[in-house]
Length: 350
Image (cartoon, rainbow, N blue to C red; front, side):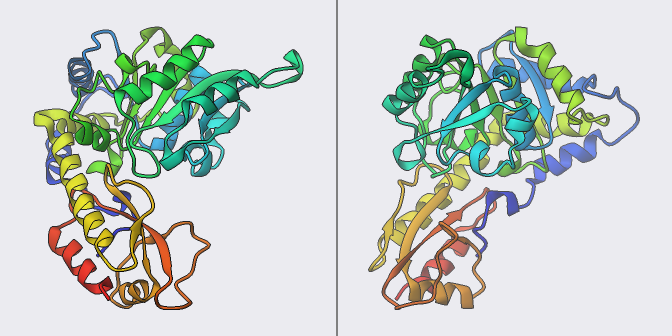
C-alpha cells in the first residue's frame, strides 16, 4: 500500500530490457548515439512536428529549469501557478539557471491557472518600466500538481494571453502521458497546436529509470538549449542509456499504456474513498493522483497497517477526534495493483 509518489515505483520491464540491449560494445557519446537519432525521429512523428529539436536530461528539474532559462532573461519573470512544481519543489533551480529571473505566482482553482488572473498578472507587471522586473514567459503544468488536467482548449486560452503579450510558453509535462491518456487527444493537440513552445516530456514518474525529453518546437532555440545543458552539467557522456529508455518508452505506445494503467488505478482509489462515510475529494481525479479527505480513524488504521502516503498539506496531523477528516495525497503508478487499492480501502473503511 505505497502511494507516496509515482517516483517511488519500479522501472517497467521493457525499459530495463532496452538498457540491457544497448549495453554492448561501443557507441558515440554525448547524444550522437544511433538510438538518439531514432528518438528524435519518433518524437517528431508522434508530435507531428518535423522540425522539432529533442534533447534528453536525467531529471525533471533540469528539464524545466534549462527550458525556462531559454525563454526568460534574468531581468524578467515567469508566470506560473501558485502551486506549480517550479515554484514549490525545485529549490529555486529556475531562478538559478535563468540567472535570476523571478517567479510570479498566479491563482486558479484545482491547480489550473485562471486566464483572467494570468492576464491581470502580466498586465500589472513593469508599470514603472526599467525599475521593475519585466514579463518573461508562461509556465504551465499538465497534469497539474492537483491531479487535474488542462484540455487543449484550456491551454490555448492561456497561451493566447501570453502570446498576445509577447511571451512564450513552457509546459512541465512530468505527467504529460497521464494527461494525454485522460483526454484521448493527440500529443500535438496538447502541445504545440495549443500554443506550447517547449514541452518537458516526463518519463521518470511513468516507468523510466530517470530521463526526461525536452522538445523545442521552434528549432531556432536549440543551440541555446544545447549550450545551457552542457554549461549546467546535464549533458550525459554515456547518453545511449538515456536514449534507450525513451526509445523503448515511445515504442508501441508503451508510455500511454503505462499512464492508462496508473490513471485507472487512481480512479478506482478515488471512487472507493469518495464512497466512504465522512470522506470527500479535495480535487477532481483526472490523472494518477488522488487528493481526498477521510476521518482520522481511517488514517490511524492505515498508518498501523503500514500504508504510505502524504498528508496534504503537510502541517496536518492524524491526532484528534476520530470522525474529523484529514486530507491526503495518494499517487498511483503503472505498477500499482487493484489488490493493493482494495486492501487500502478495506483498511480505512469505518
